[in-house]
Length: 302
Image 1: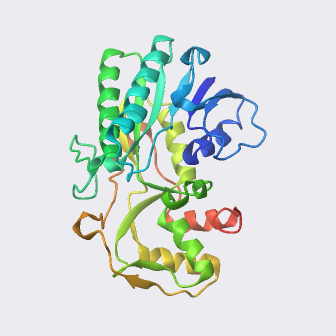
Image 2: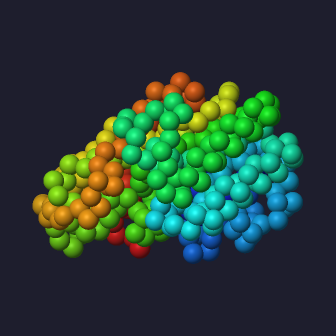
Image 3: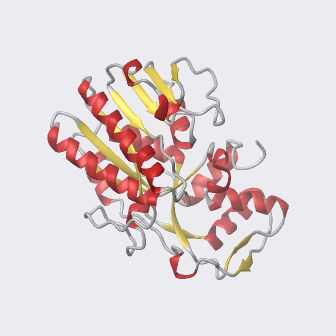
C-alpha cells in the first residue's frame, strides 16, 4: 500500500514508521531533521516538513496517518496553533480525499476534555483549556464533517492520552513523567508535587502503534480514546521505576505551583475503542515500563 505518515520522525510517528517498514509498503514521511533518524529507511522523505511540502508530490494514497502537529500545550500563539494543527490538516485531508484516499487516521488528544470529570467518554462533551486543545477540537469537528460528506472514506481520530516509550526523549521537557522521573532517579531522589497521588492514564507507544493499525482497518469513521483505561499515581511510577532500575529512591514532595488548574486525575474510558476499532491495549503500566527499560530506551541512550 502507498502510505503517508506525517510527523514520521517524531515520537509516535517514528514508532509507527518502524512498524510499517516490516511490511512491503510504499512509504512516504514528513518530519524534521532534528528528530529521530529512522535507520535504513527506504521510503520517500518529503521536505520541508508537513507545513511546507507541495501536496502534489503526495499523489494517491491508500492510507494517511496524520501525526504531525505542534503538540506543546504551553504554546499560546493561538493563530499559529490553529494554522499548523487545523488549517493545514484541513488542506491535507481535502487534498488526499480528492486524490482517492479512502482511509485517514489522525492524532487527536484527551486535552480536548480539559477539566471534565474522568474517566473521559467520547460523548461529545469537550472543554478545551488552551490553543492546542482547541485546535484538536476543531480537527475532530472537521473529521466528522468530512466523514458525512464522503461516506466512502473512513476517518478515525485517536484521542491520545499520556503516551510513553521509545523516542519520547526527543520531546525533552515534554516527555512523560515516566521518562523524566527515571532520569531524576539515576541522579538521586525524584521531586514530585505534594502527596504524589496525582494520577495519569499512561499508554505505551507500542500499543499506540497498534491502535493506529487497528484504526486504519476500521469499518466506519469514528473518534475514540487511546489510553490504557487505568490511572497510575506518581508514587506508583516511582515504585515501579525503583524495581526496574534496581534503586531505592524516595520521592521528595514539593508544592504544586499550578493550584486548581492542575489536572490531578486523567483516565480514559476505552469501551468505544474496543467496540469501534477492535483496539485493546496489551501493556499495563508495569509491563510497559519493564519493556521500555529492557529495549534500552528508558535510560542509558542519549
